[in-house]
Length: 394
Ligand SMILES: Nc1ncnc2c1ncn2[C@@H]1O[C@H](COP(=O)(O)OP(=O)(O)OP(=O)(O)O)[C@@H](O)[C@H]1O
Ligand SMILES: CC(C)(CO)[C@@H](O)C(=O)NCCC(=O)O
Image 1 (tube, rainbow, N blue to C red):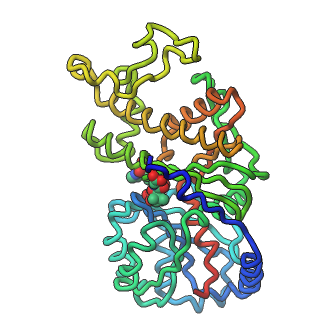
Image 2: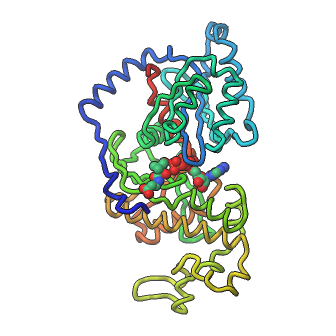
Image 3: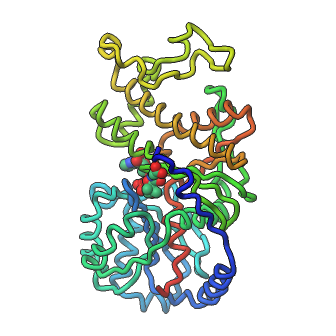
């Protein structure tokens, strides 16, 4: 964790008079927003993954279709026909949201991701599809909105309308939760692994909640209302750490491979448990024997190292990172007197092991008073939020 990070970032964002003025202004602009030139994109350019949300209008009139310039039509066709773009871009078709309202239009939201390190290739592809001939603005958030701003301008003649990553996250969550009835879920019976199963959660009254965004690094926000939140703290031990350590320890090359390895491994061959130290439970302080006392604590032994598998190492890495995040999240929830903790970010993609562990940890260590919640569009809220925030006139 960054030293003393907790208070440096505790700036609260409360809506005041200026905010109200802005909302009124945005409302009156909204009425003219159908004029905002297409295509409508929102990009969240993170430390590891770039998330791209594309709104495909489905209420196009005959006149609009006839006057749509060829480049736009080709871009629309290219994005909506394919599910893979080049070697590394993917459209998450299972997340697609149909018939949703956006800025007075109706259409489909498409969710696309690619590694941020492929930004050069992405810009080249965008150029080859004719983007450079459209003078237009794309809403963008995440650190890369700043880092790559000049590249977008130079390579594809695109201006970036930049939005704060946390403002965008919160707007995106509100919007998607409103328009997707099955967005929010929890893991029922988290303390009994065999019975643990996904269940829908009604998140229509969300405030207050703690938001734990597990990306490359981790940010923890206390959210009190739509325009009222603070960043409580963060930790550099996040999804990037899991993937980096797993690649080092197992020789794997992708997140999917790392998760697959972890699914087949046993962390107790790597970690030192309370029972390895006490011979059983440490009853006086309520520490069960099967609790990890020391992550990777057995790996000082040459003999144990010789017996350990890649799967065990991947599992221990996943367990270490997840438990650390769960523990920090629980302390933040206690400090902020908040009992619902929403975990998001692409670290949770195809990763039920971590979700179940977080659900278990929240429930067990709070004696059932705290609840871990999860959202289906886990890594895409920033991209959606910045698309919504763009008024089309920047
Ligand atoms: N296909 C993938 N490739 C790489 N990492 C992945 C992939 N799928 C899931 N992940 C995990 O998701 C993490 C990135 O999550 P996310 O996209 O939410 O963060 P980010 O926006 O890149 O990071 P930050 O917000 O810290 O800038 C990775 O560190 C990894 O643990
Ligand atoms: C730097 C960001 C905000 C980028 O999204 C994220 O990776 C993060 O919160 N990292 C943790 C930084 C900290 O130690 O507080």
